[in-house]
Each structure stands twice: as C-alpha cells, then as structure tokens.
Length: 217
Image (cartoon, rainbow, N blue to C red):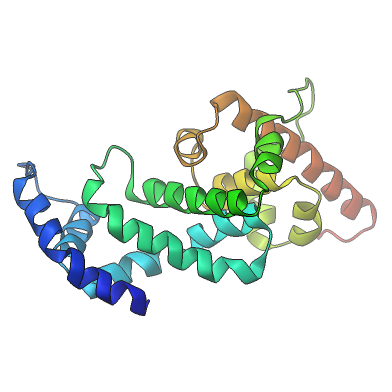
C-alpha cells in the first residue's frame, strides 16, 4: 500500500481539522470509532488494521462482481484508497464494515462501467426470477453449514448468477443481514429476498444431486 503513504501525509492536516470541528459524543467510543479517529489522525498502523479486518469481505464483493481473479488485488487497493480518502466523511450512520463493503461494491461497479459491462450486471441484479411457493429448498442453517464446511461449494456456486453468488456469500458466509445487504448493494429488500430464494432452489438441487450419488456424509 505504498500509494497510501503519500496520501496520509497529504491529507493529514485536513483530516485533523475536520476531526477538530466535528461533534464528539459524550459516551465512550467503541472500537470502530477509536480506529477511525486514529486513522484520521494519521496512524498508518490503524489503517493497516482496518485493511486486515475488512479485506476478505471486500475481496468477496469484488470477486463476485467482476469475475476476474487477476483484477481483485488492484481493485482492493482502489477500494482502500477510496476508503482512506473518504473516511473523514463517515458518520457511523451504518456499521463501518457495511460502509467499507459499499465502497468495494462501488469500486467494482466502476470497473464494470469502464469495461462496458455495467448494463449486463444491472440487468442480472435487478431482474431475479419471481418468488415461488411451496418448498424453498434448504433452510438458512443448512445452507450456512454446507457453505462453511465447503461441501460441493464450487459446483453449487457456479450454478448461481453473479448477483446471487454475491448475496449468498454476504448473507451466509459474512453474516450480513438483509438491511446491511440493502445498504451495500442499493437493492430493494424484495429483490434481495428473491435472489436468496432462487439461490436456495439451486443449492437444493445440488444437495439432492450429491446426496443421490451418495457423496454427502
């Protein structure tokens, strides 16, 4: 992150001024508040801690969206540079991880726009199949256990659309609730539920197929 060293020096004065004029809450600050304040004051170790904490989730968001592993590292650097530059504007109206994940989502969307792939993503993300009735497939606990254990993960996820892979990963692997996924993606709650429903249907088919073949324990 050598690019960030220069940004730290260039922006430190303005961030300190912004921090000095902001309203300081009376109650003790939580860990995220302390971390943000330290970064605004110019602490490189604090920023390194933020990157280490959130880079896995950001890599998931970017990787599911762009579908090109070779681009993930570069887009991660773009994401955390944008986080650093915008952090003085963060007002804790959402959790820090949700806000950072939104920056990653926006960075990936900008990449798709540069590659003229944004329209394709938006069609896929805004037009899931309609919710059905009856058996919705395996429940959240079963899906989470299967994904965490890695059983047939690759085969199952490859059958999902890119938006479904993103939303399933955020919900079941990263433990984002529906409200947080709304904030990250900007999608309506009903659209998110519809993607999750379709994903459960596909995962059910995979689980049944492997169970029939005697591959599940």
